[in-house]
Image 1 (cartoon, rainbow, N blue to C red):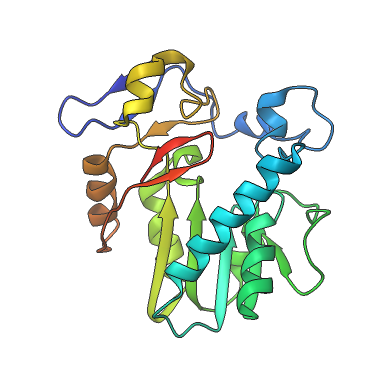
Image 2: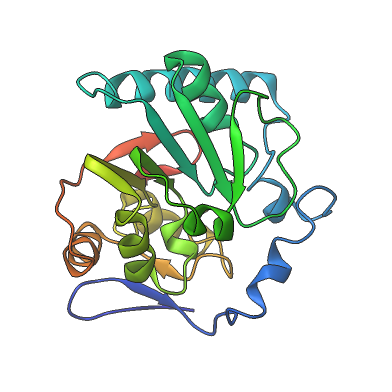
Length: 220
């Protein structure tokens, strides 16, 4: 079940995996027979869909970096490394891909550095931009994660995050079948209001926009 907060609309998955047990849902990312697990890391078996995602991502990256002077970028929660690869290829900047797995993603470009989450937070480097795409909803403590990432930002640095929109028309139509629910891996389900509150609680400021992603519907 997803229980929404009556004040801000943030949805809470109940029951949910503990911090100790949730890793089991991601352990077999390279050979799991479950389509749910595979699509987190390397879902693009369709050439048409893969091309579509590349076009959308290329436009998104160009738009996000249009007025930014950026040298060092982090893709936190990189998964199969697709986004980190495209940032590196399109912009030629230093990119660090970060995830919770010890194994480096097989398709990650040689030019892209890979660190585990523990290695990333242990080092003293700072970055101009940290991407947090479809990670916050997996976190047991989203506000703490935002605060930790904020400490890794340099002067005028920014976090660019993306989460499924729990208040989207797609979810209202498809209800329990909406792909953005992604239970039990999604622990929190953000609305625009609840995401804004989380950002403020983390001591950050920012703006929230809405976008469309292939097969996923509305995103915040």
